[in-house]
Length: 486
Image 1 (spheres, rainbow, N blue to C red):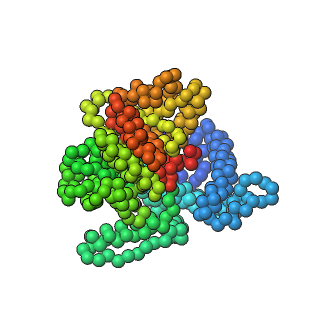
Image 2 (image 1 turned 135 degrees about the vertical axis):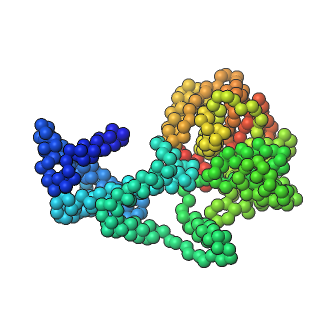
Image 3 (image 1 turned 180 degrees about the vertical axis):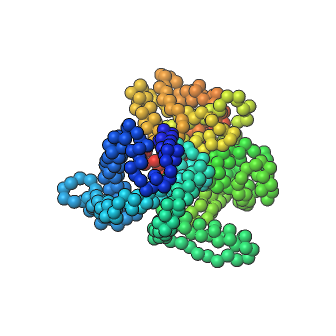
């Protein structure tokens, strides 16, 4: 890209220094004069550029139309095959018709502005989408090349400005067509504001957005952590609220449920951006289930419920009962046991233990990624680890983990450990992660009556470890948050 940029700019500057602009426009033969002794290369260069562009268009244009048909942007009848030939049939004819139409426009000076509008529109929209994705901070937006949103939006603006300079009428036509396509694919909700103008405008925007959100299809790539935290007294457990905020990382909505009306002030003092909710319940299990099911509105209900780790066995067992009941209605759960440790001078370490049997791994990896996006955890090292019983299983697990993480574009290291004979899982985890800063592990399902046994096992797992976050994935996209390859 840099070499191409230098070449393009060098050609423009060189031509400007070699001839008058009027000569460059009206006298094409001056190009041979400027080229001097290598003027004989002009025609082969032109033919090479034309041929490569033609081959690229023949290969890409029908495939693009085929993808648009598959995504239901265009009618399905356009995807009809021709005879027994494999590949796009009617899309190939459509691309051929468009190409012939461009040729029938006349000389290259007549075709060039039209083709330029198509390219600049594509480049402008790609930059615009990239900028908006960055601004909205979608967790699933993990491009291989990170570009600041300001640069993307500047690139989009530059594309549309150049389109205006080339042909203002063509720019207007392109924008009208794009708006028409957008309106044809989406329905728009219009509501009238009331009361204070500012509040009315915001209420109108929120209502319209929520209605549109309810009508849009849900997809694992759009999943965001909307966490409902049962914190107890946040003044006594500030680390718990802080970890909840780190897990959300401005990508979702954090709601903190407590029994005191001063909760908003406490959260502001902690610097935690969250909605406060005060609930009065008679029984912890019944009350937590009822509050979790009622929390939220339209398409932004809480999808994950978070609890603090209790030192009391009975209370942990009650938490597990709540988690199992909420799992039946598709709500994931988190149990966090914060441990106050002095911040290390080197890069922080986030360890993820991927089990594989409970389909919690994708959520564990995603939460580790979200934690690493916070300023306090910037440049943290994410290590995703798994335990195997043999070298053969270790090799298979390593290949699977590498494939998943590479496809998900999460910057993480992977490691598969073979458990020694007589060594327990707890011992291996403690041996490997005792010096980490935070450890994420999956929480397996508990059968009715097994809650006390599971609660005791959690005590064994956290012994000797730093901050531990247990995750139970139970939503509709369980096992699919990192992509369909899982």
